[in-house]
Image (tube, rainbow, N blue to C red; front, top):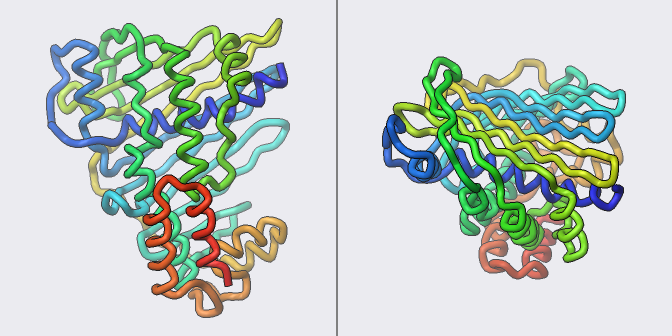
Length: 339
């Protein structure tokens, strides 16, 4: 049972990436009404979501339950740029409840912990955006959302009726999953993430033994997608996985809902924010890692006390470009941002 549980983070990463992919693609503007399930899925995958309000939930149950939820507006700023977002984030599980938030206005970043908001701006912010933007660009070159296409492992898709989400009429599509092909995606996607130089604690790829064990343990996987009846744009995607090891049952669920799709969103700056250095000082162990990313803990909120220069940031992003899929070269690029 413990070995099965240890492989679930990789599976969770796959489900999150698959949900993210459903909100990407081109744009053909096709209407969903009257089409079969496969056609609807193809249209939905090709239609782009550039903004909206998301409600994302990741839930795991193994005797007790744990839930991570993120809600709030988002808006893209271009293909290879970090999007704007203002997300409230909450976690509950193991007898603990935590709430916070993260925001990127496009000019500054903010982190809220225990009701206090901290500001990342100036050189610190530029350094973070350069790093995140380089990772986004590398991800897009890999095919977006780690190169995952859930249509490749969705079996027997069928139109299950109609519904309404956020005032929009939707067509609901349900389907089963080819677990073998899905785990092919797990192995390939986690390998790409770890070799990108932007892994930031990503789970290790599944070993052959772990994969065989997980494939045997997975008893049921269900997918539900709701696409706009008139525009074939994804409004909801839900993936439920049930695994069994002996008498123990583990359930994993990823649920993403989108509202106000492709409508203008607002990202106001919170008032009274403290410098990020105050947060790093408060969480010293966390500060060591974040301090390297943000240019040290000694700078002010404006970033005047540290951080990489624009030339250093450009050298870093160029280094990631040249590294391609070479993991060793990509990891060495981080040295360019080390004081």
